[in-house]
Structure formats: C-alpha cells, structure tokens
Length: 319
Ligand SMILES: Nc1nc2c(ncn2[C@@H]2O[C@H](COP(=O)(O)OP(=O)(O)O)[C@@H](O)[C@H]2O)c(=O)[nH]1
Ligand SMILES: [Mg+2]
Image 1 (cartoon, rainbow, N blue to C red):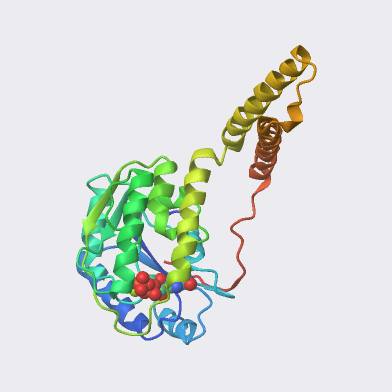
Image 2 (cartoon, helix red, strand yellow):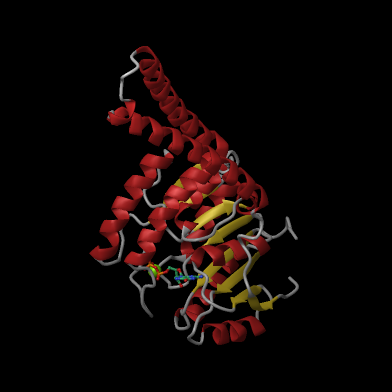
C-alpha cells in the first residue's frame, strides 16, 4: 500500500463544501506543480447533503491523483481523517480543511520540516485567526487545558492544517471528536518530535462553520477518554485495581477496629456509629472498583471494531 516515490498525501475531510472544492483543488495543484512534488489528494466526503460528491466526481474524472471516499452518512471529522489516513500512501501526510481557511501555500514548508528537519508531526498555528469571538475564546481555553494535561507545548491543537510522517498516521486511531487531540495520540504512540509552524488563516469564503458548542463539549469528554485510555487503556486494572484496593483496605481496617471494640466491650453498639456505615460503604466501593477493573480488562481485550464505517463509494485511480 505504501509508495516511497510518492512525496505527499494530502488528506481533506469535508462536509458540505461544494463551493470551495474546485478552487481548493486548483490551488493545491498549482503549489504542487511549482515545487515538483509527487502527490495524491485524498478527499473524504463525510455524507455531505449538498453537491460535494458530485463536484468530487467531476474533478476526479480528469485527475488521476485524486482518490476519494464517500461515507454513507455523517460520521464526523475524526472518522473521515481515520479513513483518509488508512489509505494514504505518501511519505508525508498533510491534512487540511476543505473550506479554504487553510492555505495550500504552507505545504512546501511543512513538507520540509518533516523530511529535512526530522519532525514526526508539525501542527499549524493560526496565530492571526479570522473567526468570530464565539470560536476563538473557547478555543483559547481548550488549548490551555490540553497543553496542561498533555505537556505538549502547542498553541493550536485543533488546527486542521498538520503534517505527519507516514508512520504516525498509520500508528494512531482517531474516532469521536479526537481529531483535536492527534498530537496527544501521536505522543502516546511514541512519536515525540512534535513541532509547530505559524500558518496563514483566512476568513471562510463559502458555506458555514460546522463546529458549535455541542461538539466542543463532546471534544472535552474525549480529552478525558484520551488521557485515560492513553495512560491506562492497555492496563485498566492498574487504575481501578489500585483505587479498589485502597478503598477496600480502608473499609477492612475500620470494620476490624469496630469488631475488636465490640469484643472488648460487650455492650458496645457498633451499628450506632457513623464509622460503621462508612466502613461498609468503602468496602463495597472497593469491591466494585475491583470488579470494574476486571471488566475493563476483558473489554480492552476484545474491542476490535471501534472504527468500522459504511463506505458507499470510493474512487481509486492508478498513479
Ligand atoms: N469529515 C467531516 N468533516 C467535517 C465535518 N464538519 C466539518 N468538517 C470539515 O472540517 C473542516 C473545518 O470545519 P469548519 O466548519 O470550517 O470548522 P471551523 O474552521 O472550526 O469553523 C472543513 O473542511 C469541514 O468541511 C464532519 O462532520 N465531517
Ligand atoms: Mg473552517
């Protein structure tokens, strides 16, 4: 599936971007031609209900370097990226938004940073951003939290414009709203050389934004999942088991103490003491955490179908 003579795979996830596509594709082609890159363009249409797929078919009919996937329904940007990554063949993989807010002119420098400077991943940073405040303020907050949790010093985790070594995209699995956290996924997959490049950002020319508050909240929950799965996904028992043992021991010590007291002073009414109920509670919680740990171990062993999508059509061409 890989092709070492192919310099770049550009992966573009899109949802209802019919007006932007022709302009975007021509612009990318122009940049690639200027720099003499060998490349493929992977368009992932995520169940658009405008004419996006129609436009893609038309564009692809005369361009052998275009490959496209169409989802039967809307699965989200992460799913689209995941499938794009799966089929990408170039040595360097570059992702980019379809709405013309990211500039293809950044491609050569991003490519250079991966190929020559040895970065595993380079993330774009929209230092000057052309979006409404309702977007940039939550985004600042989001980036600060993600930076603190991940210890990765990036300013703009969610920038659609990123470049990767092929190995990186083949080693990670992106789902839910996790596309925002790809640098974390990469770090946990063992790719530590993560860089940043200030990139040009432009106002949206056509269509409307698809990311509102709801996706933002889901994204935040995904951060918890990612952090947890990254740390304990392969060994959930270490998390639940440790907590479980702590709680269980606490309950055990409390109840032992009360039992001894009962033996020493016969008339001692242990059931009247709040400590008695606390002891029972922690014993039960401890046991439950322990059982949860066991279940989590079993689940993590058999989860294999998380990334399974219904693809209605694909375009493949020899290049
Ligand atoms: N595959 C896929 N792409 C999406 C979806 N929603 C948005 N996109 C694409 O992600 C990119 C960024 O989306 P956009 O709405 O511009 O977000 P914004 O730049 O944060 O306002 C664009 O290329 C969209 O077409 C989705 O549900 N699925
Ligand atoms: Mg946009």
